[in-house]
Length: 296
Image 1 (cartoon, rainbow, N blue to C red):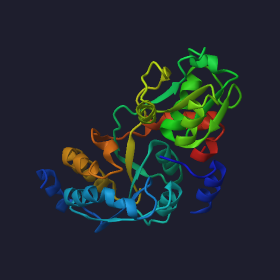
Image 2: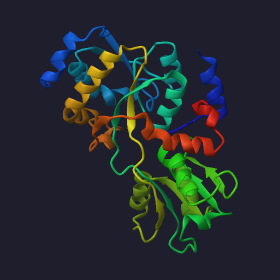
Image 3: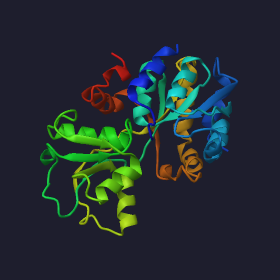
């Protein structure tokens, strides 16, 4: 998910704002169940692309036996503020977005939305003398957007794993998805770092093979996207909702992947989400000097 704002500005802005299985039948027994759940998607700006999530909204409403309304947001910053002001109840967010939102709102992980083959990679050209990440010391690498899980934080973690200090041992250029790939193809940088989906896009558009753009490092599976819930909801309600979603995950994933922009979820699973799964993101934020963004 793309980040369009400088991290320091983000911190200032956020801190300035104070037919289903029978499981869904249990919803009638839940005490303090809300009449309406307000649902935001941080990767969608405005209302237009929310239509891609409409099949999921409709089915989730049926599964939870609770009316669900979309709340358009301009960014995950806006979603954070909306949670702080009790204007939204559910948020679908990316891993790095969750870490920031959780730090500012104490929002609760509801379910993770897995992304099979969701890794970060570091790639060089076939004629490059660089064969390992450690050899990037003193070199230049192009990455995507600041705060992108696959295109920035996961790649930075690979640098750290190789013993490199991302702040001083090499030059990192944040050029966006298209810009980073273009600079890499033109030989303006020594390496490119991004998600496996962007790497696959590179191979497809260049009609190339992995021999043309060899991978010198690949991360473990990155943390899942996540549906989080406001901490203002009753804990029993949250637990019941979690069970209903996981018990009906097959149908929900099918509905989630129906949209043009949501096909990335086609082979996803809905799993129990644990906050510790996102410590990788926190470690990188601290390493790049942005620890204040995620709290003390």
